[in-house]
Amino acid sequence: MTRRYFGTDGIRGVVGEELTPALVEKIGRAATLWAKAPGNSEPGSDPGRVLIGRDTRGSGPELEAALARGISSAGWTAVLAGVLPTPAVALLAEDLGAVVSASHNPPEYNGVKLFDGDGRKLADGDEESIEVLLESAERRSGGSVERLDATGARYLRYIVEGFGSDLTGLRIAVDCANGAFSALAPGVFEELGAEVHAIGSEPDGTNINVGCGATDLSALQQTVTRLGLDLGVAFDGDGDRMLAVDERGEPLDGDQILAILALALGVDLVAVTVMTNLGFHRMLAEHGIRVVTTPVGDRYLLEALHREGGLLGGEQSGHVVWLGNHVTGDGLAAALLLCRALAGRELSEAAAVMPRYPQAKQNVRVTRRDLPQSILDEADRITDELAGRGRVLVRPSGTEPFIRVLAEAETAEEAGKICASIAALVARELG
Image 1 (tube, rainbow, N blue to C red):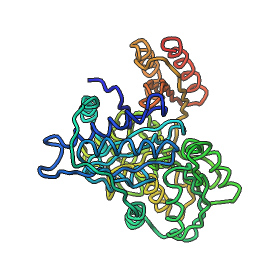
Image 2: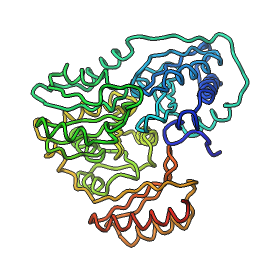
Image 3: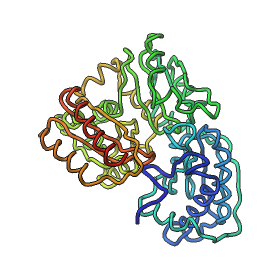
């Protein structure tokens, strides 16, 4: 079965167009009915409880209320925690966890992410089962809605105890993307002894991910260089991603951060996605660390880590998963791990361990996202010609109407030419 609503990471869309309160209410009811089904919940556990967090989008409260109506109409209790990062919901999930967020997408988007009672994102088959139940008219009595205070404080205590270290003397910029970490993350670094310069920490409902955060590092770069700071870290709107900027203002992507952590944490296996730079693979091979490659999406990383018995995984986009004492990707935990891994070094020195192949990327807006075989064949042909010196990757976005093209080669010029030619082909075939 092909999923109609669920993408790479939950259900997302422009509010009032693809995503409406009516749909979100259906999602809440369907997810609860699915969770109540035999085999998905403990016998005698009714009524169950669903912890709901949201990011700072203006549409959040209305959609939060719609989700709660759906959950309560199926007989369970919706527990409203207010603004809360996605990883906090995963950690503190009860029978289910739900987040009203569109993550790194622009403010006009919103969405719903779901976690099971163990804090794991649902598998494709589970999401398919929920979609089957979306039009169910079934209603159950006994449902309710509660509000829960101090959830953020519980989460922060866990993170500080599990990931914190002495940061005395560290001068750091923290970009909260005007999102869910705005009132939480800067205080953690201060508590651990760092001198903190917070930006992107004044959400107004319309500025999440706008000119700030992990999707736009320019403000962070300017802050670090202007103030002469040691480094900067940036989260996305719901807090499950983190990217960094070194002391020179140079950006680090998720591959470089993951390379630093792989060596510092002494792992023998790392899970990555197909987007990961060839330089990362070469570096880990030199250190005898096995790499497992998955499709794009942190839930596929998690599935691979559970299957292979690994602890560390990550994406170029900034998702970092550490299962040593967590259940999912967490931007704040990753930032604290990165600070600990520096061990007195400058971030630029730590990042230099990984050679990077130049990459060129382009998002091609399309009217349909089904890739014809001719495009895939051309990508394979060029990859074969590169013979290990680079590659081409073409894939549909899981959240937006784009085909994403990536070309990797030994020079930026060659990567750019390859990317442009494939992007033009995609535009002709699907534009």
